[in-house]
Length: 369
Image (cartoon, rainbow, N blue to C red; front, side):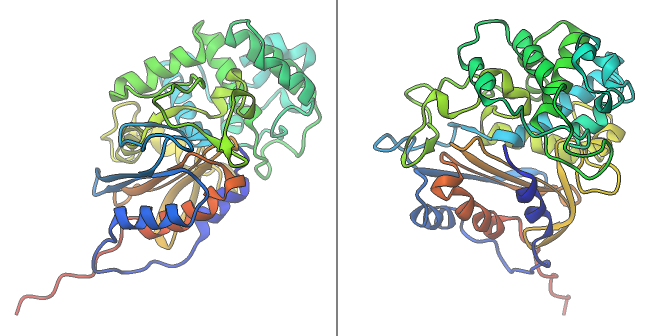
């Protein structure tokens, strides 16, 4: 989930190309796979407000069966936009407020909370502008959550008591400082306001209304599913994040279902979304302050060689890698996933692959004779 530099590179690459026809996704994915150490790659291309193609190549795990189009992939921090959308649903309903300070959202943490964090709001938490470090510094304490048997909301509060006592890395409402802790604080506020666990809220507020059936935050991968990979081997549970970290990213989801969420985000700005009012979608997609950091999204005037505005993000827990770039103006985009992380060079192949397959700008139609 270390994405600040990745987001910046996605939204700033190149000028807008013009092509007569789209490249063959099957050939492009197969070529990328051959150039990669990752066992499998998948891509969904969205064009004109619908899923155009879903292409997968490779194997679920080293020496295993081929991947299938309906398989689930861990999209890492690309799921931050989903967390932000759930929070926005609660704000629209009045269960939360964008303006309530953190000390009011989570009063049980105030005794441990540094004064610099007490007045930050959900807007700062979800846009990485609360001044919070990326993660807690005490990794020995962090590792205890792999074996913690308490309910996940209790685990999150235990983590957050330590996190809000750590010194800030910058001032609130200044330049973005990428923080998984900010998303956990927002999720804990939602849990307190509703009395429901984050995972239940995501199912009720985001997945079920969109008809998404594949999404799970369970990190225990079944034998008939793709596994993450690290260091040229199949990843084990200790290679991933503890279960309590899931509000910061880690949903496993099929490409088709991920595309459903992305289409709703883009159509929402036109008043055609299922989950939120048009103005709320626009707020999610609007950079906060003088930055490119929106609520769960990076936003820029162009991305991957095409003019925007563009929404983008990249995600990884070290065992998987995922990229999303959306163009709400044309209802197009590309989602790319790999079942290996940066250590196996997944980022090196997914970025150019996404650039190749991003919906292309067609040349003008010839004039009538």
